[in-house]
Length: 188
Image (cartoon, rainbow, N blue to C red; front, side, top):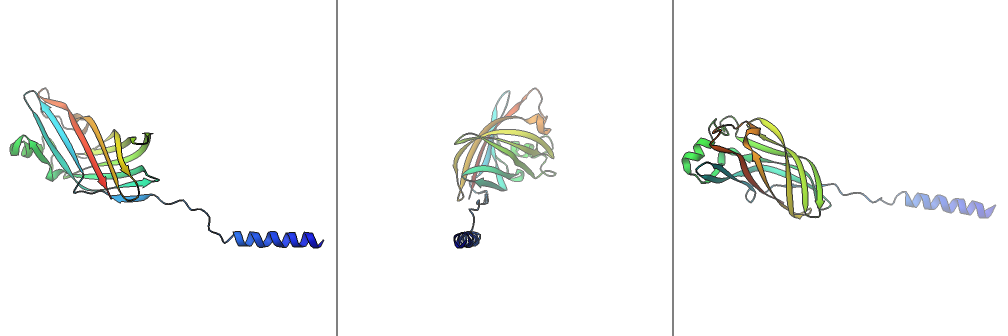
């Protein structure tokens, strides 16, 4: 009887002690701010007689990283400060007009990540919504994740996109529908 009482008392004591030991808590995902100074989206567009290049700077953004893996995020493009590298000031003015981006009405464009599926340790398929000129379309990116942890993030994606999907129809038959985009995203 004494042995059973001591065993029960010991079990009660151990249960009480272990109830105060903190459990293993899963660390919350880390949110990193996009570096607008380093990040940008480069573009190349063509027509029958030439090609033009430039970039869209980022205005803001963030990414969520969990266990060294991208799990979500969004970024906003500053359409008013679009740069034209090959094509001149006349092209820059035309691209900002209603024929193309209509920046007086739509000063920003955005991309919001919906899902991230890693193909391997450094490559992720990202599904998200791109919004340009008030039109939101699903866009799949294949991103090369260069670095990703709770202190910093860098990834690149290269895609070809049909400008007609976001309502840019100017130059049919002369201006190519496909625009090449190179996304360079840094966060810290």
